[in-house]
Length: 249
Image 1 (cartoon, rainbow, N blue to C red):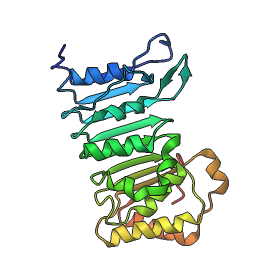
Image 2: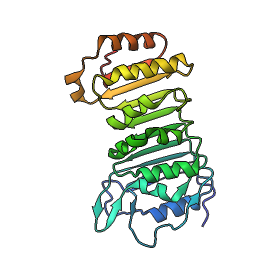
Image 3: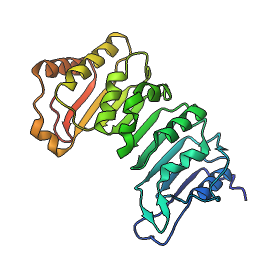
Image 4: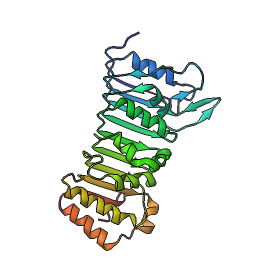
């Protein structure tokens, strides 16, 4: 069956529909049957390690937006992790990717990005597995050279990204949002990177570092860092450092 007129689809299992299950093979088959699909959202898709899983990659040349979210649970042999579907897809036209899953494999994501080589503009990652990229941040960033908007929720990985984005890495990045609260000493390094990018002619348009409420307990930033950040803000950069409703800059 072909769904040639289908351009947007959302598939998932909500809290009121625990008896419904959507597996990886079904989702891949739907994408394969909808050649004009432009945007796709998967929530709590499950997989089982049996032969019914897709054995070959599906290439979808039209998909622009992919959103994956849900939290991994194991019930009667069913493993819920929407990000698992990346193992079976090649998406050469993808511009927006959002992954909000606790169980995310570095190998799966990097392999997906490497074979797809998408013109990715926005990447949103909220996953406990973010820190698995810390050991090879530059390799990961070189897989997404076209990204202009980057949103990360994981302190160690996120701040490793900031320190790695010299002018030769992520040359197009303009907006960076991080949820986390690093050590105070890290902010001087962040200021140095931001200043270097500005001097090279590829400044960020906005930087938002959003602390959790506990970040308020250690909110005192170095005066030189504050002064440097405020100068960047005066020059046109939108900077927010602090809890969501309080900017320390």
